[in-house]
Amino acid sequence: MKTSFLTKLLTPDTPSATPDPDIDVPSLSKKQAIIMDLLMGKREMYGLEMVHECADLKRGTIYVTLQRMEDKEYVVSRVEESPVPGPPRRLYALTGLGQRTYFAWQAARTAFAEAPA
Image 1 (cartoon, rainbow, N blue to C red):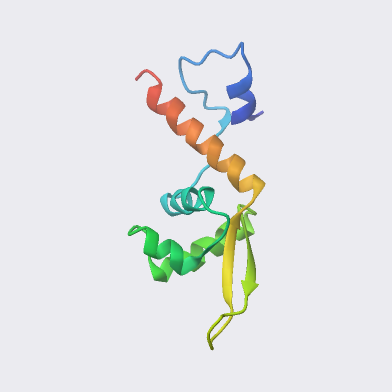
Image 2 (tube, helix red, strand yellow):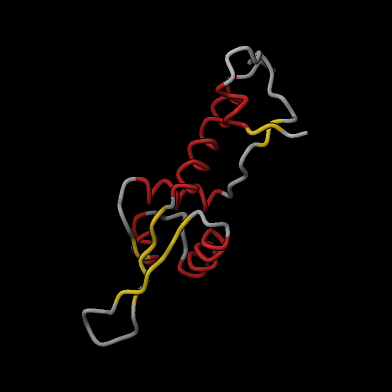
């Protein structure tokens, strides 16, 4: 039976010398982690705004990645009418689940980086 990473992390009697393969560690792609990091510092952002803020994000993949994240309920979006003539624009925000997943992913990276080889 798999144990939640956070449950294992927060259990005081769990030895932390080596990573446990039974821990359920969140899996995020590099792009998902970048998007979550950007959204942690801001309330809402447009997809192209994220592309302009980070060179690792590209116009051709940002919306596919955001849609996948929305399917996993890591982000939510809302449509906003454009202030200039044109199509409506979509704003994205991190959900509570997205925040918890990001924090667990960061903790896992730190724990595994500090684990003895």
